[in-house]
Image 1 (tube, rainbow, N blue to C red):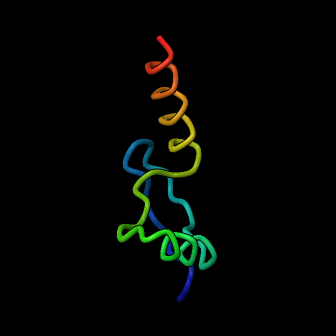
Image 2 (cartoon, rainbow, N blue to C red):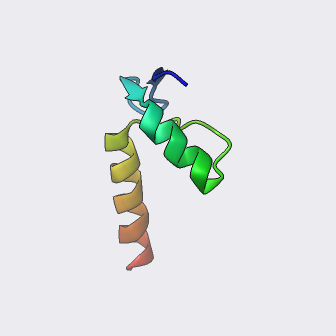
Length: 54
């Protein structure tokens, strides 16, 4: 498995989906590659938590 370059669907920035991250996803049973960069994933998670805590 090699590193993959992916373009974030939210911000359009290219990010690297490393070999190690791919192994982690595989171990967790995730079938799809991420579509958001780590920064956008964190922001999305924080927003979900804010909405839940209301």
